[in-house]
Each structure stands twice: as C-alpha cells, then as structure tokens.
Amino acid sequence: MTASIAERLQRVQERIRAAAEACGRDAGSVRLVAVTKTFGPDALREAVAAGATDIGENYIQEAREKFDALGALPVRRHFIGHLQSNKAKHAVALFDLIHTVDSVKLGRELDRCARRSGKRQAVLVQVNVAGESSKSGVAPDEALPLVHELAALEHLSVAGLMTMPPFFNDPERVRPFFSALRQLRDRIQAKAPAGISLRELSMGMTGDFEAAIAEGATLVRIGTAIFGERS
Image (cartoon, rainbow, N blue to C red; front, side, top):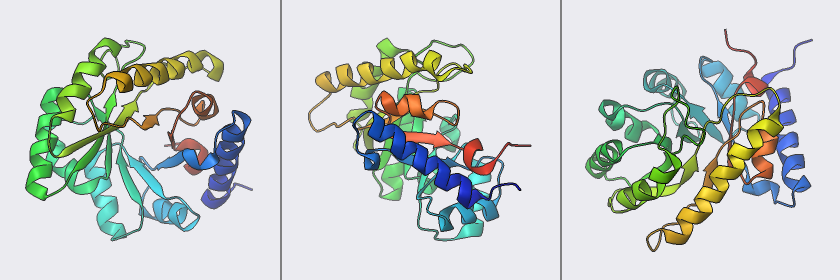
C-alpha cells in the first residue's frame, strides 16, 4: 500500500533528526522546506496538517494559485526557483524568504518592491558552487561583493547562502559542494558588514539531504520523499 503524505513526512522528519544527532547538532537547527512543485492545494494542506511548517515553491504563478486556494494557512513560504526581476513584486507579496537572489539588479528590484509594501524582505544569495552553466547563481568569488551590495539595501535582510550542487546518485560525491558552501559562508561572515548574520545554509534535497545536514545545512528542500514522484 502506498504511504500517505503524512507518513512520508514523518519518515523524513525522523531522518533529519537522526542525521543532525549523528553529527552532534540539535535537530531543531534544521528546518524542512516541503517542496510542493506540481502538487496541488490538497497535497499542501495534507502536509501542513501533518506538521509541515515551511513550504517551498518554484514558480510564482503556481504558488499564487495555491496560496489563494489555501487562504491564511500558518506556514512560512519559501521561493526556491529562478526569479526574474519582473516577478519581484509578486515574490515579495507571496514569500517570507527568497532563496535565489543572484544579482544586484534583482536585489535592487526586490528592495524597491519591499519598500513599497512596507516590508523587509529576507533573502539568500544563490551560489553556483560547481560553476555549472545550466544553473543560476553567482560564482563563489562573486558572493562576498554581492552580499555587501545587498546588505546596503534598506528593505532587504541577507540571511545566508543557497546552492544547487551537481546531481550524483552517491550523496558522498555531493558532500564536497555542501562543505564548500559552508566554508564560503564562514569566510563571508568574517568580512560581512556589521549586523549581518548569515545564519542560513539552504542546501540538500531528497537524495542528499543527510550529507547536507552533516555539512551544516539549516534548510533542506525536500519534495519527492514527501509527495512522491512528479508526473
């Protein structure tokens, strides 16, 4: 019999707890972002009823339709997809944390939209650790200058870094990329403007989140292990 969303969510939560404890971390230091891309409001509602507190979405239009259908559901909303500047207004209106800021241009547009909304928008800087041409994100040596530029914007709050590493079937082959992001975060934090705390590391998905936790992930973005394979 196929497991329910609630059962799969519980299993993932148990794995997160075990992975954190295995490396001497408090399980509460890792937040599960349940990624509902292509799954409808009913699946999202079921996950929240089962204990999901953070929801991740990849597309503005899909997120808006789902959130409208769900109303004031008590969850933190994360945007984890590629964001174009012309969608900044919608992202600010819909999301608590935007994981994928990769340019000064996008940061300034988000700041402008947040100012108009009377909001201070939390963001992460996306880093393309592996330098893959198929993925967004700044090069590692560009991350510090970008953090400085974004930190100067009054209506943005830079909370940390995010990456999407290369895909490997073996999580241990992915682990060095997670380690690289953590080390980069530590170097940037040492040189960051006063008052900037890069506390968040958004890294790790269904196939490799335990390795990400071992390397310091505070946000793991998991869809398939909770909701099943996407059609």
